[in-house]
Length: 451
Image (cartoon, rainbow, N blue to C red; front, side, top):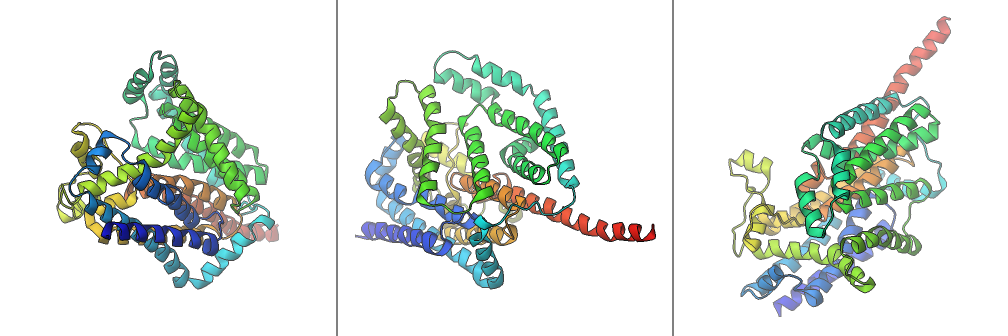
């Protein structure tokens, strides 16, 4: 009875979140609508289908499903899903109530988006942006040359044999060893490519466009050098989203259907190449499995591990909190993987409420969900002040940050996953250029008067 009631509460929360997205946020592309849309897409009806129909999907899944305490796990997970949706909405509404004037201005901007021209944020040349892009190009080129990224990609393409041989090569050689380079490739460089391209086009400034072209090439090389299909595919989707936002900002059924077609067009051939023995229906089933079942199964692993088999960590899973409280830092992605797979070196990552649950139980789910709702709505208020190149580039970068929230912890998504640094950098560069322009304007007037 309690298990059934927990499923009802999760389904009701999903339904309410869907209504809120359609009638309150109104399907405009904002950070808060992308957050709620991603949550509904991966952990909405797909979560219920996984729990009630498709589970178990693996040996670990079967082991969890046959455990004696499985009903308790289901109850805690269902209630946490319900709490997450309610608290995300509460966080969004908190910002709107705290700054009602900004909330009204935001709604006006996005409702008028389709009828406004794209603005670059100033009439003067964006020298600050050009300097930042050139510096980023030099840094990325230096790392790529020193780590022989072109040779790494060529070596991967020359690997013959089955997928296991490619996986072994990928594990040994894929990705850079430099954290700042990985951060740039994952989140900062894609935003700078979009910001530089749009600013250069609106102002018809060829030096900026040329430097942006070099940055685009280095970003593509960095994505490909991970030897994984997802980073490059997501970058393509990010560019397509930015291109769409240049003209429109509303997601109708045609746009949603086109998005599905684009995603299948990008991922379908990759799956067929990687697993050639699959037919068309098998490929679609594998795509669904990777997109939905794997994420929900990872979430179930976390809730089945804590607190039934491992006690809550109370901050030991979050490095800054562990350091402040004098606790030993024990990352949950290693702990959960060792528990269920008994293998060193493997990791299991899950969405942001998984780590919230690991550390602080229901209190963590409530706090983290409210915090991310507040943060995404704050990004909307600060970023969407008009149809500007910064707004387009920032929203495209938030897409990756919100995506990372679906598969990783909140601190990881905010710091290295693209949810904080790219939109913040876009705001700083554009606002900095505006301040520089205003500062130079009086000097120019004074000089002209003196002559």
